[in-house]
Length: 293
Image (cartoon, rainbow, N blue to C red; front, side, top):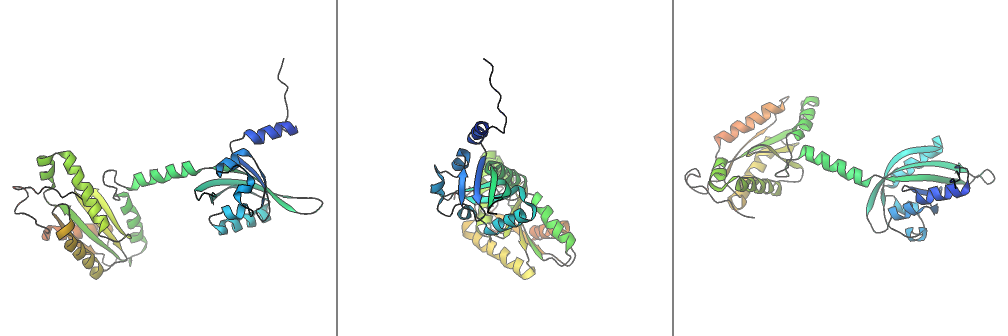
């Protein structure tokens, strides 16, 4: 027996469509009270019924109320909004990022406004995008930033000749010894512990980069020579007790209109002039066993 075709104008077809669709469908009043929603909408928010979302409904779900205000403004002006990205908060506290496409509907008799909408959960996609961005800007081995971060710094240098910036160049002393004496695995562990040391003893706004091999750079935003020197001295002092291996550092603060490569070069040349944190005589002859933290 042939299957009977039902058009979307058929109530039963629409009912099954809304029930089985994996996107969340909802109807709310203009002030956000949820009047109806399909199963996917409830699952998206980890509840079994509309009542579980709370008496006030949608307003409590919005992480940023200003985004809700912006959406309502667009609805009033245009009558609809397509793929409006917003972060919502579930009753259990978990946050979800969704694309909201909705329409403003008015009752022809009463003039009362309702919102008909559909939510597409893009949380997993946004998390993947964030991971990809992190992978492109962070060193896979140590978790420190990589050279891609320097592109952002270069943009500031190019657009603002007065932009202040300090740079500390860090180089592990005789790093080849650790690879040769203890193996490449131990060499990798040294790099990871060195990155952790630097990130632990600089402020959150002071970026730590691994720019290649055993070379690290600490970039200090809005720092002059005095501030840069203080951070370098702080690292030197903390290293006496806490550095995993001996290292040397050099520093420089940006001069008016100086390019980033030139600043890095000056810091590197400063490193060659200052050797610090000597825990033994000559690591090439008597390599220091890296500290474990």
